[in-house]
Image (tube, rainbow, N blue to C red; front, side):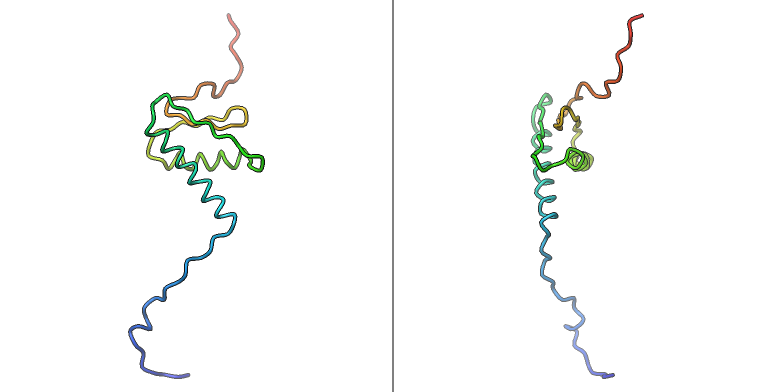
Length: 107
């Protein structure tokens, strides 16, 4: 054990280099930025504007849908999301055709 006088500079937190993001983290960050850009375009556009998010071959609908839902929830504008035919639709108005169910029989 050694005991010695210390300088105040030794107590200051050392600056760290920013960590390098993994390829997975970079892909998530890029995807989230694209989603936020689309949400911003819808938010400032006309009420009747609709955006369609089409999936690439290596993307899964469940993953992209969860990412879009997370960004829609965090976005300040009221934006509706719907999934039709393997694509995700975004609009400021209600998206028709949700929760279809069975048609009522005429009485």
